[in-house]
Image 1: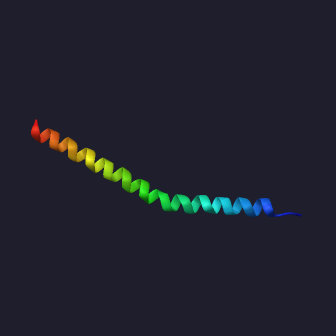
Image 2: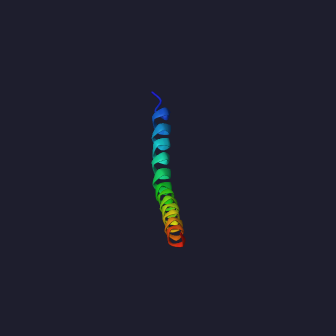
Length: 49
C-alpha cells in the first residue's frame, strides 16, 4: 500500500495554510492603508469645499 498521495496532499494542505498565514496580514494592512488614504482624501475634499 502506497501512502504517497496522502503525504503529498498533507504537505500541500500545510503549505497552503502557511502561505495564507503569511499573506493574510499583508493583505489586511494593504486594505487598511487604502481605507485610511480614502478617508483622508474625503476629509480633505470636505474641508476645501
